[in-house]
Image (cartoon, rainbow, N blue to C red; front, side):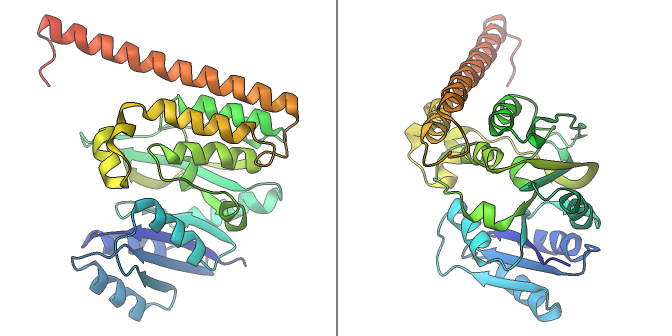
Length: 295
């Protein structure tokens, strides 16, 4: 059976470590590595992780000598992993025991696949748990342009449909794609993975996550990126995607005509996102003007 690495990039998780560790180590797939990348925590995270590693040989604990930032710690986890297949997990996630085995079943039926996602439930800031089935077929297409435009459409849809970077990935494909520290880099990476190859999906709720709403300025501070990026995050995101997909060195699987069509799709997706943001702001201003917005 293939070795699967589930990696937890973490900083100051404290007691949350114990619950996520139970769900990872409770997987019914026998060949498992649980890799914890501790980004120089200054609470009791290190002690908890060392205890886990001492109790279970499947646990590997790596501690960064200093805080290297959120994205570099995520990238470090994918490089340090040993598994042929790889998945990230967050410190407040819970995985069903069959997540890995069900995902590998899908990989086993289709050698083309680079990523297998599953239906996920999300607990919002209000405590309400929500989920939604995923019925899109475009990500499974042999045509990279179809996969790319499908992903662009999904990035402007509900987050309940798919969590692109929290699927089970072929690690060699993941490592072949560069990443850049910026706001919404996860969405940029999702488009690169869509171009890299077809995806599969398990239409069962196999993961449970928290959906956190953070203002761009707060997230910029956490990521260590310039604060001005918070004011133009959408434009920077789509500009990054536009440049990537237009470069033949990055997208040899596309023809020149497909690249032009892909860039046109990026412009359209950017415009849709900007219209949605403008409409949201207009509605908020209207509520403020009528005294109905008490936030």
